[in-house]
Image (cartoon, rainbow, N blue to C red):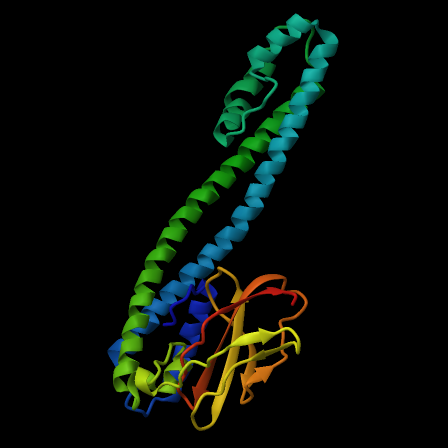
Length: 308
């Protein structure tokens, strides 16, 4: 496979592609033997199913987390109303004592488990056992606080259960991913062995893998004097010897990894093509000469700050 970070979606897309291409070449020497195809189908289906499960749990977890967060703030709002009530009906010292009994302090717990204890084990019994000092809490206020406590406890527990379920599903997906990648390596090596041009065969790329260049000595050399000419507003480089040379100019953001974006591809040794207006900041640029199916050596990287 290409040496880059590949998303789960890309790996699933490659798996679906491999199936189609292998069926396409069913009569060829490099068609997968039955045992290799069976191993691939098993590993790919298991990995894809694990990804779908993780995605579904993630959606449910995000919803549960929002509901738990909303119910947490609703409980705090209800408790703040209770605190204001105490300040009205009791003097400051009496209200402070009441708050200490209920463990309602200036700062509410930030840990979900601590708030769950207050909502489930502590506050509701204290409200039910209220001793009448300085006066009874109204039934409506008891109901409001009790309902907010119950709602928060229920939704926060649902959130914790989904978090645990997500951890299990993620671990299973990672296991399936390792197994799937191991089979992909076997398939890649099979193609490198059986295709007519082996590692350099362009048909390798049909399966989503990387085709090797022909030996280094036969590669088109790197274009020299690659630079941007500010006076004319064009990129220039020296011509490379060869038949049917096509130049490939690419760019990506400075100090980033991953794919390079194409800026120009053609026979000319200069181009005025520039990235769009949305590209701002420092970017790396490089160019190479390709001859037929074979890729040339990249030029040295030129750093440019956009817009130029």
